[in-house]
Image (cartoon, rainbow, N blue to C red):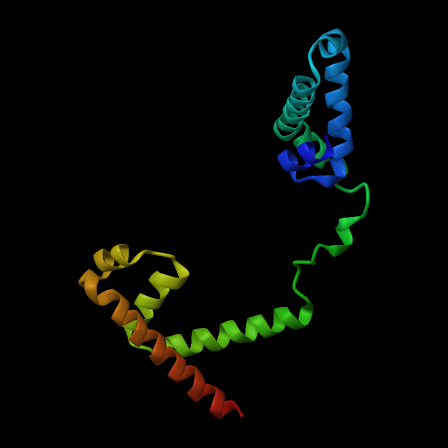
Length: 161
């Protein structure tokens, strides 16, 4: 019975519960169990346990998972705090200012390409329509614009050191 229950649920923790459910289903049919021969009786019991396991998978597993959460451990302490520390906020502010300053030194086309793609989230097709650039060229222009921006950022970083 354990083997059948485990084979159908892969949940060893609840195998005994499934067997108990199966036995509860067998009890009203004791007279039938007594009247059939031994080999058929084993098959009948195995099928009952299998059906109990399938019912458990369908209905009981969901309820079981919901009730188990939080009973054994308090998981609230393991959830990371998403708030920024003051140091992180300051670094992010400085990074944004450096990025904005470097973007201001780019050509208008490069600046518009990068803003449309990364700040406004437009697709390549939308950028193509807005800026009147062939769709096949958008990706290459974006690569070039990113490289120019990176070059400007590196130049600014070397000046600040």
